[in-house]
Length: 217
Image (cartoon, rainbow, N blue to C red; front, side, top):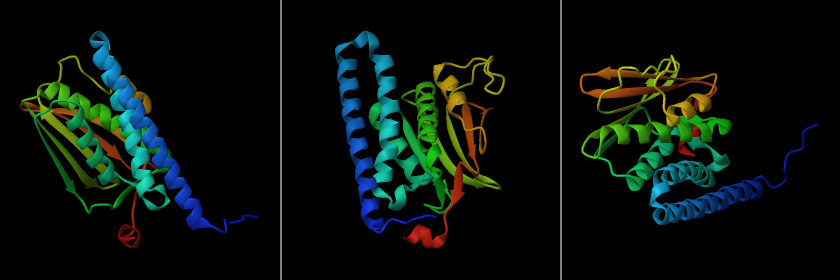
């Protein structure tokens, strides 16, 4: 027999408060790591990398603290991730476009952190290889079975690079392969002229559509 809580609103408020506190603790850790990076310039690259990962998880908990039932919408996550990237490292122009109704795609609860960390890695790679003078374009669009996040930047993919064949992968892309959900997610790379592109395709059970009533609530 299933027994429902007599105080669902109270429970929901407590869960949001927990997410808010976790976010604040993670932001405190980000600050400590950043301070260590300043004091130890020989380790700054590694420490900055750790800080961006912590920041990505903090973004997830921050969004969960603001949404009813802790729901995370993919548009909101991308917004926060792009803003965090621009604040944490020098980049050129960044364009973010949503080619679908905002708030219409929800990320599954158990996939929010992996998708945030994957997105962080893809954005970092685009900023790193696109250069501070280049430009980055992030597009979220509908496809038949789900959605695709496409990130393009100025630059060329290395000749030996093959994500599917696991050749030419650095630490970040190796992490992405480990985090990529086994069902409902795929990642592909392509080159068009002077622009490199990656396409992260997400489908159920990783993401799901949100009803019009839920979007307006």
